[in-house]
Length: 59
Image (cartoon, rainbow, N blue to C red):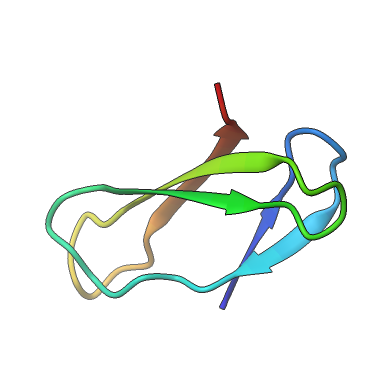
């Protein structure tokens, strides 16, 4: 479980982190507070490191 900040209402929300991938993964999750869609991008530099996670407003 990871924590991101909603780009609309600025509340922290939890989402399930996908497993390691050698390519970036893009997910669309709905904010648990304001219900607006958020594009979450997850990238790994190596399987042993924490992923880089970014959250942006869905366009």
